[in-house]
Image (cartoon, rainbow, N blue to C red; front, side, top):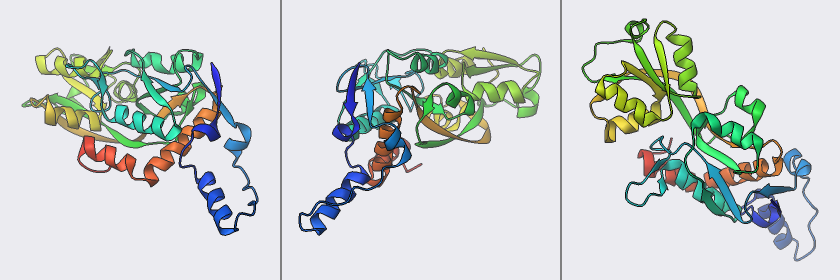
Length: 277
């Protein structure tokens, strides 16, 4: 792995902008150095698995956040576009690795050596923060309960022994289902598309998944499914980074803030969701 100075790669940093402004106003006289924040003071550099590249992992079957384009075989989605902009703000190229199971992402980042970050529509939780660093949030989300259109099931009727509820393994949706539908049979699957197909074909009676995902899929692909319950869990997505790489966490947070300030985050949200989230 190669050690890279943050000051080489973080573009649009507020500290850099301030320093340039002070120099211009001072007629060329050296400006006093602004005090560094705690993150910058503790970690002035970061490491990358591949020099000059931000290497990312995800489960690439979670549209509209990430999925595989059938024609090109390349990943597409909100997180994909966001990661490209993030890398540009860091002065890096983007490098996406093949899809892997969602519940393997945090252990992979914790172990190190394979990828720099996991960007996967991943909710920031205390359990995940105990294993890896989580960036500042970049998307707000809730959960949803999905059934086939025409089904008369409700949250109450789905909480029964004969009911099967699909979830994506390792997600907060799976946690919610286990806690709130304790009588039902919870079926963990590798990806949300398999879960939706299972509800469509009748293999499962319902599905618990993130509301932005279910709303997008029902509008664009799974039109014979319906959302019967919007569950206000108040979640926020973040990027998973190794605790051994605090400089990268700080650099990513700076880049995310710059993307909000320059409008690139809003533009990507509007592209995929029709408006800012």
